[in-house]
Length: 238
Image (cartoon, rainbow, N blue to C red; front, side, top):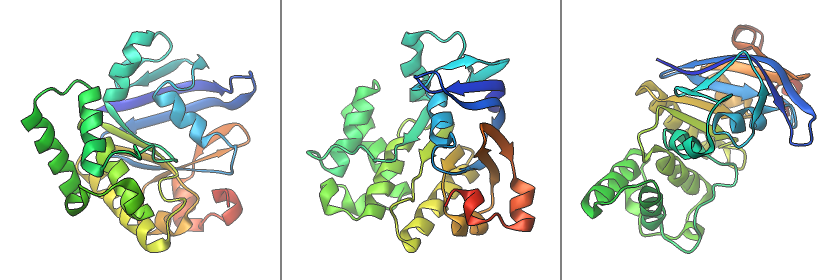
């Protein structure tokens, strides 16, 4: 099943400056995809087009989860976003609610009604990310890695076909980064496509996936180069 189909897509900042030109990008179920590149090269901007936080001005094809982004109506955007899981760089956990309440809030906001169904789904995703024993903790009582696992649980709540994650391990130590990437890799092996931006060469070496690089307003697949030649820190964006 094709989840994202971009052909000759141009991505622009709100001020009209081009970020990426002529993007061809194709995602299918279960794929695990890294986006690499220097800061400002367009990685986060590309992710934002998937959930229509940034508009696409020009494309031969721009289809995400069955929605044509060139003709999508504003009222359809929440429908699209409910079909994907988004892991933000700043986590965006509600600081005045515990882990369980954070996840319940998301389900209620996306149309879930039954208390039993909500409780069961929250418990399922917390178990999946290894945080079932921390459901009563407040976000500030969790480590960075634990907070990131909660954000992954939140992204899984509505059983998405696609997860997009912007620098999910940027602030984590090596041990926690490894845990998070392993978790995301396991999710992809169950059929959910995962796209993440990162500068961490170690995890890309350890957890193989498809690798795209943003550079000079272009997006190119560098999977073979990466696996055989080992990209430099500069090419990764470090």
